[in-house]
Image 1: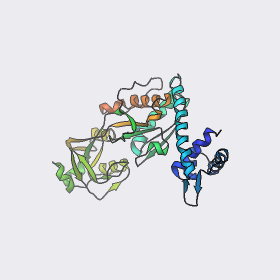
Image 2: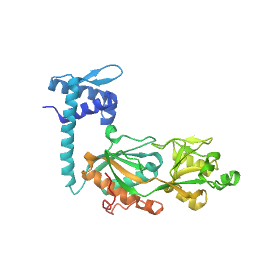
Image 3: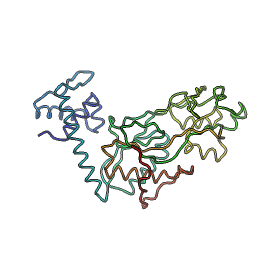
Image 4: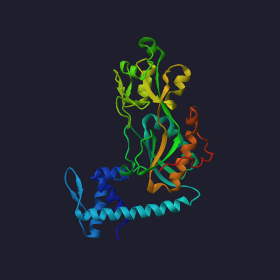
Length: 314
């Protein structure tokens, strides 16, 4: 009988068409992946993969084995999740991802407190400037700002959030304050290419506004600093700019115009019943509760228990 670990190695290799990428996902060496594939091929008596210098492709027989392996591994994962859901103390590893600024400033501190409360958990946390396909890239959870979520994923809203337009008083004194959305096109706008945000396009009040400016970045914190420096108008989440608005470093432009950008926990359906994932999502919801009031987010005490599931979308 094939080893379940070898089946998992084969599935990861087939998904990624690469021994190296599979090794990275599994946190093992490429030589280990190669060896386990050969062992599996020997046990099954079939050739699973065509190997070339550039790419790995699945054979016809390998495709059938791949479909069976998916079913077997899903069943085993479901069994483990069901058992784990009944455990009082969640344990195991979680791979979590988020965007640069939100991940560093909000999610990272919350995860630190999560581990203090549940020391049997281990978390690998990564931040990206692109939208992650959590199913194919092997993540258990994506903490995402924005309401566009693929229908095959489960999602729970963690916090209400919206984006606002703002600029420094020095910029507005120099260039004037826009009074309508149409006037934004004649201003220096600080364009951010971050995750799934369309570059140079702001959707406000059901209008699509094309904006330009001399400065752009793939990092929201850089754009916010440019705004503070008086370089232009930025569209940014309230959680990020609220302290700057309160201090007067930035001023809200067109204050009656906002863009919905709620915070969601997004995860594959096959993990929705696991104790470790449920505890993590509950904890994040509790930790991010302050975002709903526009207040600064304070770390949750490691002695507090996370709240219950209040918003759940499928």
